[in-house]
Image 1 (tube, helix red, strand yellow):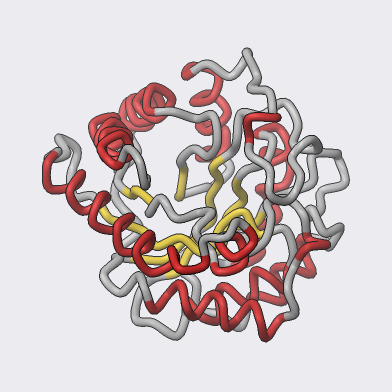
Image 2 (tube, rainbow, N blue to C red):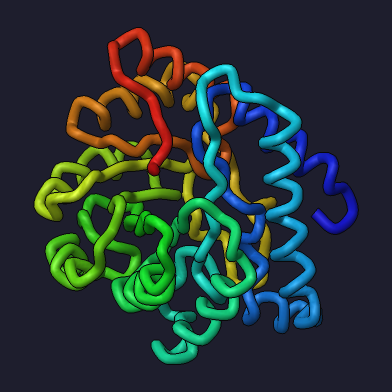
Length: 271
C-alpha cells in the first residue's frame, strides 16, 4: 500500500467486478502494536487514511454491475494472527481498537475479524459497537476437530460472551473450510445472521508473530468451483454472510456469486 497503492486499488476493483458487495480496508496489519514492532509507529494515521482513500477510489472508479458496494473498517488481531497467547491485556486492546476506529470514521460498517479468543473479540466488538455502524464479529477456529476457537474456548462460551453486543452478524473466518462446515450450525444458537469466509491455506502453524504468509502453503484443491461448493453448503446451513479470506481471490468470489444467483439467493450487502 505504501509503494504500489494502484495495485491495492486494482485488487479492490477486481473483487467488485467479481460481485463482492463488501470490500475491507487494507489495514489488517496496520495496528499500533504491529507498526511499533516494525519501527513504523508513526504510520498508523497515514496508513489508515490511505486505505480508505484507495477503497473509496476503487468503489468510485468501478461501478459494480451487481449493486451498491460497502466499505468495511477492519479490526484484526492486534499483535499476531492465530496466536491467542500474544493478546494484549484487555484494556490495552480496547485502547488500540479505539485508536483504529477513530481513524476509520467514514466506513459503512466494521468487521472484527480473525479473532482467536473471546476476550480479543469482546474488546474489538465493544469498541466497534460504540459507533453507529453495523458490526460483524468473526472468529478463527482451530484446524483440528476440536470445534473450538484457536484459544481452545468452546463455541458455546463464545456465543454467550458476545451476546451483550447488538451485532449485525457473527461468523467464522480464516479457518479451514471443512472446519467451518462442521462448526457453523453452532452459530444458529446466537439468533443473529451468521456467516463464513474461509482461507485456502494447508495449515497456519508455520506463521510466527512478525512473520508473513509467505511461509504458508496454499491448497491446490480449492479452485473456484470447489470453494463455491463449500460456501453453498454454508448457505444451505443458514449462513447469510459469505465471502473469502486468504488465498480466496476474485475468481472464487465470481463463481460463488454466480452459484448463489443461480440458486435463487438475493445478494446484498450487510446494511
